[in-house]
Length: 368
Image (cartoon, rainbow, N blue to C red; front, side):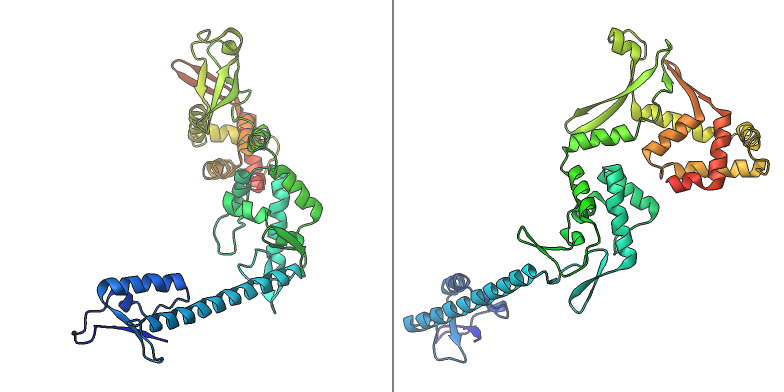
């Protein structure tokens, strides 16, 4: 059936209306047709069938068209129900019914088969989450390891969350909240899945606290105030945002005002110390001291080797995990004294030598 707009008998043809311009778009909804007839009536346009003997200028023609459209809508709805029932029945049998193929699998003859290299990456992601317990740290880890999605994009918290909740990896097919044994092979063992989701079910704040405990503050145990008292890391949360600080033990024991520098923002003081370290790495006397310290344990290290190792720390620093950054800071820094007029960083020369040996051996890169 096709429709065309034309003027009433005895009148010249009118320009096509919006409905007439879009007559190539079809619908089997009776409600849609009723709205279309309203538009036709307001603009003085009639609907005439060129293949059947009726038009909308007569009551019988409108009745006939409504009956035909009712059956057409019924046919469409019955077809949709049958398709939905077929999909549901197939999934209950564990059959893959199409869609985006999950990482770790490929489709062959409408069956999911394991893609070995991708499956290894999926297992690594699940096992690494058990160790880190954090979406953010896991995303950083995958970036450092060069593991990406099938499209080549970096993993983020969103697609990691979806992956770790995809029951396809334990050999199941899901449909409308129900789960059925699939005909494909599982990639993840059930005990690993249960452990991962035991962590996921934890309160996000508790999980974040565990993560912070695993990744200590960069200057913990290294920062001291003008009165010689140590500074301890702390944090507060306002409006859902986390703010980190270092607070003097003097202030914690005797209250605000008991120390000229009682509290400093963690990000600012850590950034200032890192900037000083980066500048120190380029100083000739530091390179010479590092070389001498490294030679005490390895005679074959040259001054050029020591210089190259120190130069590699700067671009690599941002790629390291917070725990690894804190370890290196404790290795290099003996003490950081902060006062009203600035801060003083005291280095460990033997620590620089040890770090140079690690860099030359590739240990830092492996940790990243």
